[in-house]
Image (cartoon, rainbow, N blue to C red; front, side, top):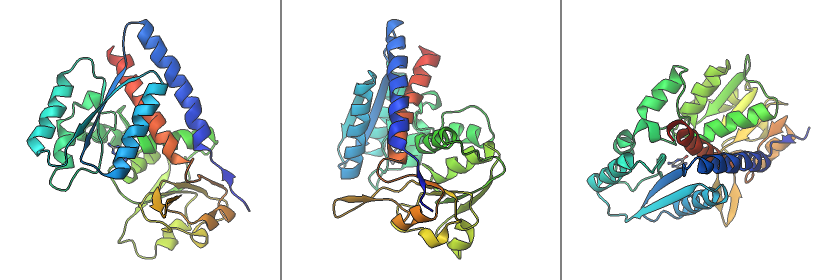
Length: 280
Ligand code: GUN
């Protein structure tokens, strides 16, 4: 069997076109949608991600302000910057690019973000609301995955969804979204024994570990839907967390690149517009 390709690039292009229209509509009403992104230090991958977020905003006619702070920035300086953006009425969404340099606490910075401006949906208030099934800002990567599943007619209700990885950015919110969509959910981590026993029973398998070849074709149930969240750069080439032989076994699968990645940025624009439309 050869998996049906889940084309995140095409789905994101459609969403971005809608975002452009939404932004125009807001501007006609005198509202300029505005995303502020804070980047601390000089992590090369983070720099690339922030640049791609800026470019995507520009294409969708959303104002973006990137605040680049030096690696030596203190916790107090960073929290002050977040508070300044909380108070700035022109700013709708605030995002602090992760990971932060080791001496800074991501938890403390995220806690400082106004939950109503938390485009990443990482604030405990938003995570808490999501976990009890209330409306909330939803983290961009898992939100994008839910859009892809819907677009490809893959309904999680009654299916076994297995998530490999329990991060704040993907694994945990993904579990909540799939629970809310009536899936039976298993979340695996680095201490899960015999990972393949779990992955092989998945109808929907989400892999978000940040390690190439976490899952290969022999670990997948034939016909399963496989969502590969990994972006691992090796010798200038991008690899996911799932080996390429999985395309032979899966029923549908996201490629890397061109799968989940473009959807993350598309959802960021959409979350920013949601806030601007709510608040004006
Ligand atoms: N680093 C990797 N992914 C993300 C994300 O979705 N949001 C933020 N803020 N940082 C990230």
